[in-house]
Amino acid sequence: MDCLPGVENLGPNSTKDSLLTDVEGILYPKETTRYWEEIQNFKARPDDLLICSYPKAGSTWMQEIVDMIQHGGDPEKCARAPIYQRIPFIGFSLPFSIPTSIEKIEAIPSPRTLKTHFPVQHLPPSFWEQNCKIIYVARNAKDNMVSYFYFHNMINIIPDSGSWDEFMENFIAGKVCWGSWFDYVQGWWKAKDHHPILYLFYEDIKEDPAREIQKIAQFLEIDLSASVLNRIVLHTKFENMKTNPLVNHSDLPFLFDQTTPPFMRKGKVGDWKEHFTVAQSERLDNICAQLFAGSGLTFRTQL
Ligand code: PPS
Image 1 (cartoon, helix red, strand yellow):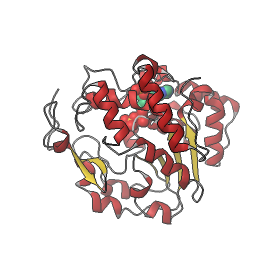
Image 2 (image 1 turned 90 degrees about the vertical axis):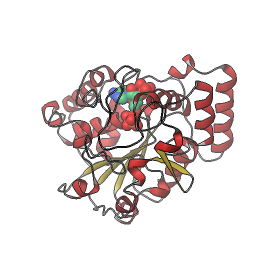
Image 3 (image 1 turned 135 degrees about the vertical axis):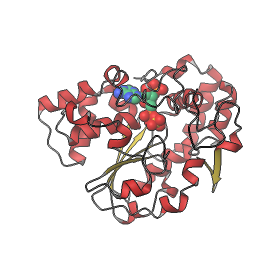
Image 4 (image 1 turned 30 degrees about the horizontal axis):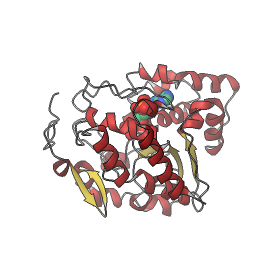
């Protein structure tokens, strides 16, 4: 894999410690903590829209859906730039590849749509203060974990995953980049009670994309005709996004190892069955049942 210019300690021999930094118990990429103050002081505007998810829960899918909704379902308009430029990632910037520094995001005219992976406690406070609309996407722990396992080996700014068993222990302990999935999904679930957050599930979008896209459009106060809705469903189907170079990240070979399974890997609900033992599956089920009891938060692991 080519080296990413200007960023230290990359590559398969890097250790976890050299690539991630702990902030209040959450591990972050060095490129996030390097600009921590700047990111935390970001000035959100009231008409900013934020798309948020735990890594590998479907944020790129949501970005493309939202961009299509905002552009009348016109794929030509959504072909104006790669997705990471159309809807920049706040909280992570690689100056030589993904030009989404705070300075650049601040220069974008309103209304802006941004993406992040911050847990609630580390979201730049101005998003709360400005009462910005937030679309949150959650994915069941098992499929999310499988996708994250492969991602660790694919992207060169976080450590390799190690064995499946090792990765599972790290995932359960929250010792992975952007922190504990369990705390994360619950934090955002609670936040929706006091903030305009549309909390969506990957499994629901997979089951009935038209229904979920309508929900998003309503949240954004945009009317969709039946034909526009159909176009958005078609354009954002997994098979179509997989071959779309503006969303599949094939344009970032210095960041994503092209020899591992691709960014658009399987796009399925239930792929976890190919990876979990029965005991591991039961363990995850038990943890979720215990943690989410009484919260109203439930996940489907198959359709
Ligand atoms: S990232 O790196 O955190 O931004 O990744 P993210 O985009 O959140 O998640 C990547 C996973 O989402 C799948 N994906 C999709 N699934 C279904 N339909 C569509 N259109 C779609 N687009 C992306 C992608 O394949 C990753 O999941 P896995 O299970 O690894 O395939």
